[in-house]
Image (cartoon, rainbow, N blue to C red; front, top):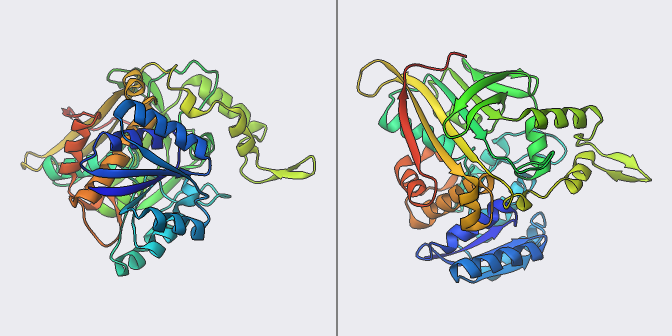
Length: 403
């Protein structure tokens, strides 16, 4: 049993804290902190009503390293779970180093003023964490996170090698809004509008964002258009599966979403550089975030399912030649909301955040330094997915994807 401090008070944090409260044998005490303490209080009230567990709440600017360090010392957690914005990753990691506390996040660091998603800033802290005898676990969400664990489970149980890997992320939910994002609008739109990149024969191939499209029939959802994108787990998967010839990431978007986003791009509302408006600087994308629906408000109206998984092709472990396997997880928006008050996008990230934390606190996953999900035994993590609301299935396909 261990104390944990969760930073951030969005939908993912809400799910993670609810799930931690359901596992008091692992999480003996939960503290929750964010810039807006009122959001923390709302989560704490929901957790208390649903589970009877008390969550302590605090106000903190996570980029203020001395203040965050002081809060960590006051609480005395064994682990800090960073569910705040990716801009804040390095500051929170520095506070963990200063206080001797383990660290976990769900998304890699990105600079505030540049849409650049790379692990190198965090990987550079490996030696410092190792010298302190601390562990930092990066990307313990769904994608990144579960998708990487899926790949390593296939490599442990089905495939001797992985030649090609496609990650398919489908949100078949309908929230009833003309245009809204299912997680933080600023991060979502930066991610979607960035250039697409995929791994091919030892190098990155870059193409304009949202220009390569394929149609795929997703179980429990149906046919959807999906677009080639870059996602950070491609970087770590290329590192830890060195034989991989090609790795791609695909995400589904409806026509209405693409139309709205195209207009917003064309008029400059997705810009992340500041502009002068009435004598003061504003960032257009941050203003857009302020007028779009809050993602945490979408849970009560969202219907449908998500389907996220990996399709991997390689040499079979049993020596039977090249085979293709599809491992995936389907989550229902309404069921996620009934359990935690949040829609499935938050649920599918918040549950793996809890499981990653449980892996660290229980000692199932141990190490000194900075680690990605691919570096640990996938089996205990996969078992907890089945036990805590994200059951998965694996099936053999007739062959690799034709596109």
